[in-house]
Length: 230
Image (tube, rainbow, N blue to C red):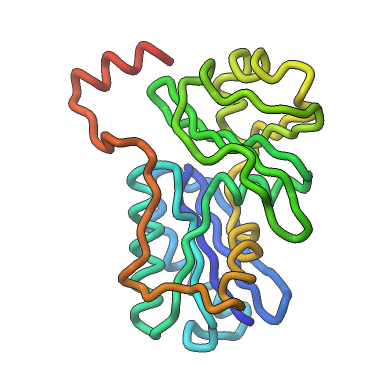
């Protein structure tokens, strides 16, 4: 099975091709230039692999949570590419992608959500998949869910943005922290593979981001007030 995966939910732009169980890809710090760089990088990736979109079986994308603009770009590109060649799509949680990419069995995935909040979820590996110990949610760093156990790995930008709050809550439970980790397309491709194999892909028009934050766009006054929480 052949899959294209992409993620633009953070300041990183990451693409991957899973072709006959072999994964190749590219990751770069794109800042706010995802929309300008994603298609040229994608074309280069396909050319280097000597394949075309029409040879793929599906397209997977980081569905969120993450940057509002980034999620719209990622979902829109996945939809456009899939619609053009009639491919199914699968949206993968960026927090689960952090867990998949960590290399560990028990992961507290935490992304900086800005304005004094984090996106948080906890997962434990079960065979080749993951059990959702704590579902994705939006929290203040000192109000994230408590967890049981003492063999957790912290992964994601939330651990870099709010180390004191998170480490205080999980003191004695976290054995290592990957504060520079971000959702990578390679992990998204690996998570999407069994879904596509089971026929779980969706038509392109049904693809949708997962924002978590109820108020996607804040008024200027609200942004100023909430910025003081960080």
